Length: 210
Image (cartoon, rainbow, N blue to C red; front, side):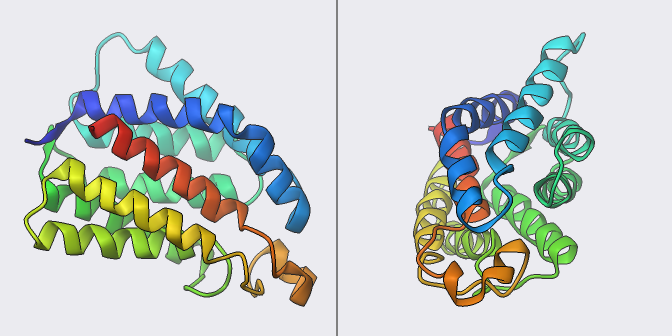
């Protein structure tokens, strides 16, 4: 089994739904250690992505075309740090998926490219209480699953589970990157909103593939 353009479109639409459903939660998480706009910004961005998908005259030919549309839309509509970070992630992922179908190795390439984009853009590493703390274990789990012979859907499922664990692991961390770092020790005890949204987006990818 492989994942095709229809999966990519389903993923993006699922992202929009889950971000809308969790908008208030993301706002509250970001209010606790940031500026409180993460949920609203992402919700606005993915609504715009879906509007652009709906306006297309024909389905995109390649998975990368779908992800590039996401990237450019998020970059132009999402403020704060999330727009550039997720925009770069989807842009790098689009370059790694200029194909009509993805096998397990292709899914790993997508996730690795997205993580690389986030790291380059945000200049963050693990343990700093950012979305990298969810993307990194997710990518590592995807690699392990693919190496173990799992199909693309199971690779995504493994990535989503690891993203959940990674996001939860940000709760006791003291932020040393981004706006939350201004709080110092007071940032401990809070779930990082970027790690939580990463968990939601990767869960949407796995659900679209199931």
